[in-house]
Image 1 (tube, helix red, strand yellow):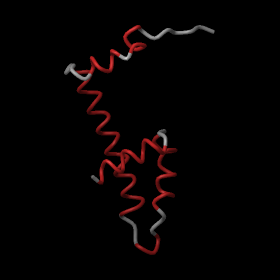
Image 2 (cartoon, helix red, strand yellow):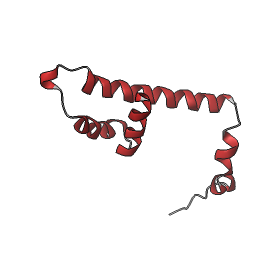
Image 3 (cartoon, helix red, strand yellow):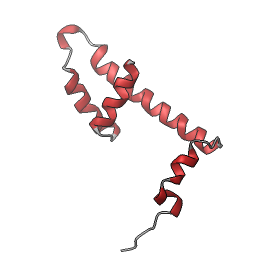
Image 4 (cartoon, helix red, strand yellow):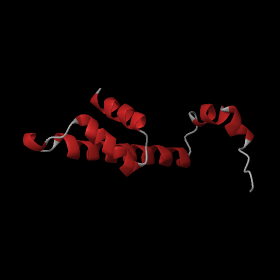
Amino acid sequence: MFFIRKPRLLQTGLFRAHAQFMSTSATLRRQANLDTRNRKIRDAFYQRYTRVPRERKPDRGQVVAQLPEKFFLSIATLEKLLYAAVK
């Protein structure tokens, strides 16, 4: 089994600090993809929780528990994303 070593920049954490000041097309594309993903997650939440008739409205926790399986994220990440949308 081969071990692929991370570049030194990634190991030290300097990459993240440096990436904040970069405005290359790759950085902009990455941010656009992240925004698109977050919008899809919020839309899925609103469709399952907010836009349903009152008699069939599920518990918020049940909806949040279903979404990580669909988007391959942790529940904590989804909670942060959904609470950020409310503010």
